[in-house]
Amino acid sequence: MKERPLIILMAAFAAVWALLLITFYAMRVEVMAIDHIGYPLIDELLRDLAALVTLLIWIIAFYIIRNYVSRELRLTG
Amino acid sequence: MTISITEGLFGMALAFATTYLLTLALEMVLNERGMTVPDYHRPGRPGVPRPGGPAIVVGAITGMALLLPAKLAVAGSAALAISFLIGLADDLFKFGGVEKPLLGLLTAVPVLVLHAYNPFPYIPFVGRVSITYLYPLLLIVGFTIYQNAANMLDIYNGLVTGSTMIAMVPLIVAALLYGETSQAYMGLVFLLVLLAFFLRHKSPARIFPGDSGSLLMGTMFVYLMVVSRAEVIGIIASLPMIFNGFFILSSIRGFREHSDLERPVEVLDDYRIVARRGKGMPVTLARIMASERPLTEQQIVNRIWALFAFTDALALITLAMIR
Image 1 (cartoon, each protein chain N blue to C red):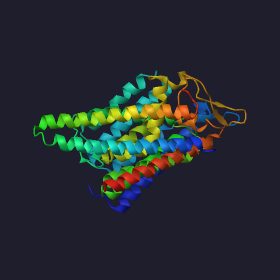
Image 2 (image 1 turned 135 degrees about the vertical axis):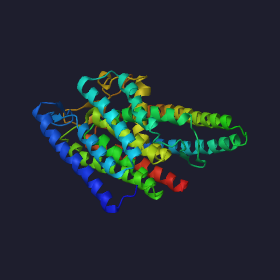
Image 3 (image 1 turned 90 degrees about the vertical axis):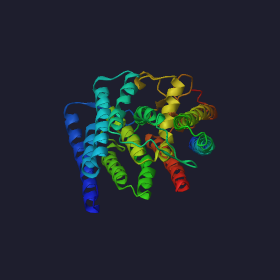
Image 4 (image 1 turned 90 degrees about the horizontal axis):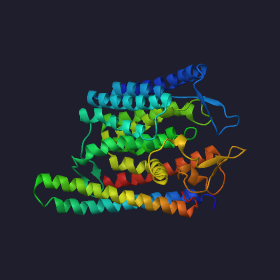
């Protein structure tokens, strides 16, 4: 297929986008749980932690996608 | 600060004209002084003047000074000036792979000191989330990540300028939809400044932005994203830029100057470009695009722009979900 790299990358970005939305939804659950604790400083720190965990999930997902794309296109980078 | 449409149009036209005319002047001066680098993807490898960053920074600051409230204009101008100077120093003296990202951390200082940001990003499904401790840290790191991501995308005629312009579109749409006039003006100023430069940077390039120009483009994008309070929209729209940087850094395992890296692609005798295969070479968007068959420079650029258009569409869908 002539445009295979472009299609694979578009699929990868669509997957990343879906993952972003899923992690945001998970964050909503976390934030709603945190809001019930009632101590402002702890609430704030836990919200920051939730955002940090979300970022870490993205980084791991980025690695997986990079390896998938490299393998699919036989780049072995 | 209320700005009439006439004033807005005048400010934007002045920013565009300043950048375009300065770019033409820079081309002449740099050519006269022999400050050119070879364009390896064109027959005869002609020398192309570099850097074009000064034209971009002056145009952007002119537009911001005319159209934005003082705090946003001062913080933005200072951030642009810092990244421009880091890039210019790199253009003239060449930093190592680590110094540039480290110095880039300084870009956030004026934005933090003048508090030209709001630590309440809008997250889809969640709403505005207060992350007051993490946000300044993300801001500091974000500037240097985007500066270097833009820098790593500056490999072909017009690519980084066109890509940054495409990625900015959803941010401008977001500012317009939210009725944030200053942010919309800022986005339009940045877009027109980049368009003015793009007219000379597109293939066949008459000028290259250099590191002073590409770092500026990364800074403009982050500042627009932060001030528009559309961080998530900006991240989605710029996924190809982030991925290109991430692919490179993760495949070479760390910061290294790109001139020290093995070339990920090779240029054939007919000037088409094809991916090299093997371990140790960075995985770049260009290498991925040219992995199945040789492509011309413009064919690779068009495919990367198509990717940006695709992520723009995803960003706009997300924006519709938020609203």
